[in-house]
Length: 85
Image: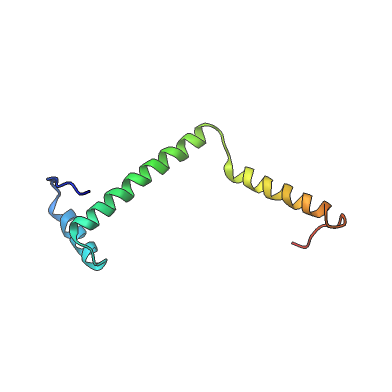
């Protein structure tokens, strides 16, 4: 579903948006829709990352620790010899 709205932009913003839309083979409306959607998603992801940070979660370290544990279990089941890296 598409809604028609009236928006105001600076002349510079419209010129740049038109140039990018043309380069990508999109209408100005389609390009602006895509740009707004991408900005909204960035806001959501940024808020999520901030919440994870405030919670003190270090997901990358946890994932690396999990990978090391999987490697140790694999080593135990391969005649006790460590696997080649």
